[in-house]
Length: 66
Image (cartoon, rainbow, N blue to C red):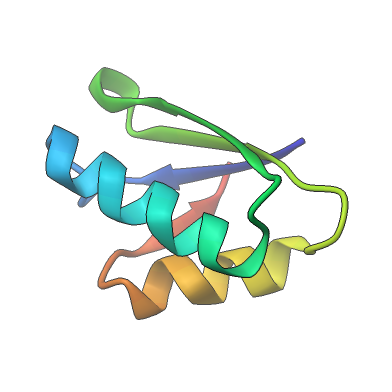
């Protein structure tokens, strides 16, 4: 499991955008988002943390390793 803190993720639209970005590089990924704590947890069998961080950043957010 890969975890990020994304402090600039504040709403359901943000969560959906991040989920869509992750699934664009790994359609089978499981994405769990906890908005109150700004946590994103990703289970991906094919994509590593730097690549996931990059797609979240490309979507306009600032992921930090958690």
